[in-house]
Length: 238
Image (cartoon, rainbow, N blue to C red):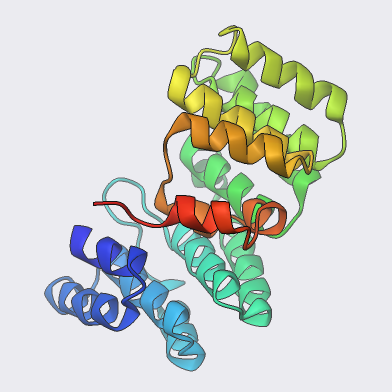
């Protein structure tokens, strides 16, 4: 898994694909292995093969650790978008939402599936619908401050800057207890949601983290895009 992710970070998508296919050969029924191959295919621009695999993924069982076909479909859709295939990205991000919509009621009510569905809705730009789910999670799981951070971020994306700023300040004062690193990162995301590119980059850089999802995130790609300092920040380090 680490090899696959390292190859992706370095832009060696062919090596990523080769290693992902070894994982699928070893674990043919595991949706996590299928995810690795589909993401590599999307990054390589091999749309037809990626979509054929996504069709299979839609019917696969969830994996240990609650990795679901809906979650995987969202991730592959983000890879399509990050590598210039907007049509496939739209098609499969919407398919991810439909996967969550089709869940039996008991499964749909779990915190994991509600959170993953909210993320899928965020990816397709349905911020109000995502916020409805996040508000429910913030109420039902009050010991998880990340949902309160999400409330501020989605408020920013819906142009409610007053609420977004209030949440950011509560994070900064540690009223919303995310820790120094995660708190700074979330304040950066909220700034990005308010289209404050300089503020977003300053805070994200201050956090010192640059996880793999950052190069895929639709808001960060829109706000920070190809700015040289941002591209340099996302490059893997030794």
